[in-house]
Length: 351
Image (cartoon, rainbow, N blue to C red):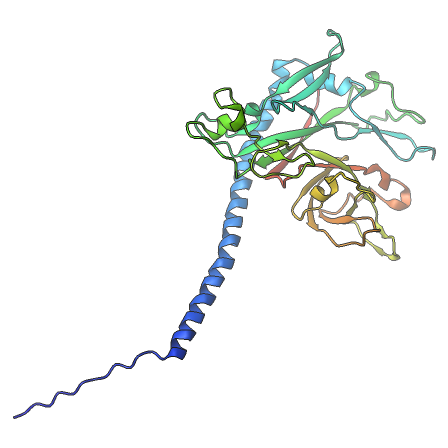
């Protein structure tokens, strides 16, 4: 008996089927490409939030220790007459002065990056005594051998504590009127520049703290900026310092009196060559006003070149400010860092 064998033919994929498969694969890869950056960004934000809390605890411990290093440091800073301009309700209007100063930025040594807290010391001549906070004191984590991830800086202001020491007509007399005031610090914790080159045989900690063991040519700043203040991202240039900029609170649309709002901060009309407002007007940026309120920029609406720029912020401006009562002018300034910080802490010291 003869057995008949039949051969099954295997049909190949057609060109159309192959092209459809390639298209589906490409779309899948595009989808992954869109998802991965979002996931990475969310993971980084989560890490920043966690590490920011740890860094803030370490920062407050260091600043609290200033009292043990130099007794009365915060009191002497508060009592000196040169800590800033007095905010007023309106000069020449009969309104009274409010004893709440603007944010002051400590001096930064352009060679070492050390931040100096200037104190009024009656036992020294000239008056000022400087307490340095070196870069190695301001990077985190501080553990030996661990790469630092963050660096912190601060702004400082005197705060009127509402004890009826408002003097009509002129600023208060120095020293005697400050006895019950507090000192407020806005502490900005920033991620160290990500593109810093570390030479062989050195560590990131040694490079950014400018240790003598590292050749000067390889020194980098934890956060660098060019001569215009624009962040470099690689530690080059100069140390990127916190900044302040003048702002205004408005609650009525200048083009339509029927439109009211409480979520806007207006910047300077004439910005000149100072890029500070551009750094402040970033979505996600953290701004601290001179009244001690912390805001997050949620949008930067486009405006015509001749119009006053503004940002929308969250939370809304304080409810006690009211343009109709002529006290909106109390809010005059914000402090911030050119880079969006990982965390901002407001810390009040009662000397």
